Image (cartoon, rainbow, N blue to C red; front, side, top):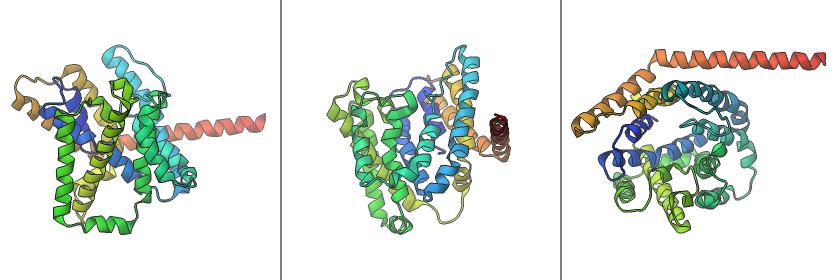
Length: 322
């Protein structure tokens, strides 16, 4: 998750193109991070009943709250904005998709051959016209496969991944790097295709190009996740603290991202440009994973939960009177 702010800043800082250092950074991050985070979320959802019970509080309520907040923020920054809860705004789609996975996991696990069906859905989602940005059907359908991989992943398999020899993970890392280089400099894909937001035809791709692109991205994701799980330290570290506080980092960095999009970063001097990007990224992580930021996020969401509880009590009282 700590890489997401860097990818977002790189994409909107100005002068972006795939065949550049910024393009390599963006593609190297975006080609596996969201799929990987969905996979880890599936791994942490072993109890379908508990996942359903916590889905509203953990994902849908933050989605509703921050969609409203960022509507006001975008209006303040850009002078115009649209509030549409059925069309998730930038980056908040992730909360919507995870709510869907967690809430319906209890039903999904009952489907026979679910992994085969999810894989087919991943590969063919780019051929389905109405799988677009409304309700984020394109992304939700595409990433379901990775969520179910995480759900199916058990501790024995994880231990086998942890025991892989270094040369094997080095080969996987090299394969991942090769896919990133191909994507940026040779293959006919845009940065937008990485997001799986719309059908492949929307980006001028033939059906086989869309499917091939998904195969490459899926292979790159699983390769890099294997490497990361293998190299994961046994003891808690700074990254552990970030992992425990992903929501404040994920949400609050979007305020900075919109400012970067408006103001940009001077790009005439590459050293200054990437130096500012790096400093902004590190500052974002340090500030938004700090205790004040965590407390602020918890305070906002705590008040939102109280509002929901009061509203529910009022509705129940009115029903009794009726």
